[in-house]
Amino acid sequence: MDMEKIEKLKEMIADSNNIVFFGGAGVSTESGIPDFRSQDGLYAMKYKYPPETIVSHSFYVNRTDEFYEFYKDKMLFPLVSPNAAHKGLAKLEKEGKLKAIVTQNIDGLHQKAGSKVVYELHGSVHRNYCTRCHKFFDLDYIVKSDGIPKCDDCGGIIKPDVVLYEEGLDGATMRGAVEAISKADMLIIGGTSLAVYPAAGFIDYFKGKYLVIINKTPSPRDKYANLVISDNIGEVFKEAVGE
Image (cartoon, rainbow, N blue to C red):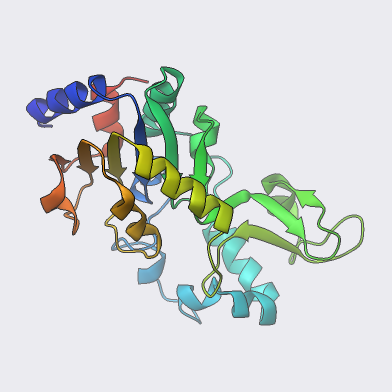
C-alpha cells in the first residue's frame, strides 16, 4: 500500500467538511458479495438465459418462478457483514465529516455498519412489497419463502424493491443523490469502474475541491482526480479512517 497516498487522503479528509461517497460493487466484494462484472462474476457464468435478461422487468413478469430461483440463489447474501470501508464511512458520518453515501449496491451493508444518509440508486434487497396490497416484507421473509414469495395477507406476489433492467431509477433518490454531490467539497469514488449509467453520470454534478478515486482497476475519471489509489478499498479506509 502506498502510505504517501494514504497520508494525502487523510489530509484531504481533515480539510473537508462536506464529504460524499459514491460507491459500487467493489465496496462489497471484500464482504464476500461477488461483483457482477468481474472475471468470475455473474455475467461470466453460464445460465439458460443471460443474467441481464433474468434480472429484467419483463423476465420478472413473464417468468417469475425462474427469476426468483436465480435471485435467491445468486443475489441474496443475508449473512454477510460490513467491512472496513463500510465501517470507516459510518465513522466519518458520525464525526460530521461525511454527509451522504450514494451507492449502486443493493445489499444494505452501509446501513448495517451504521450509516444513516444513504441514497440507494438501485434499491435494496431488504425492502420487498406485495404487488397487490403493498404490504412490506423483509429479506428474511424472501429467503425463507418457497418458490415465488407470496403475501401472507392477500396472496399477492411480492416484488423486491430493486431496480431491474428496463426499470427507471427512483426520482426522489436521484434528486437527493445529485443534490448531495453538488454540495460536496470532497467526493470519494470507490469500488466502481464508473461503467453503469445513468448512475456514473451523477459525478458530473461535483464541483468541489477534492476528487478521490479508490479502485483496483483504472476508471475513465482517473485523469480528473486529485488522488487515485489502486488498492483494496477496505484496507485504504482502515489505514486512513479506522473502523
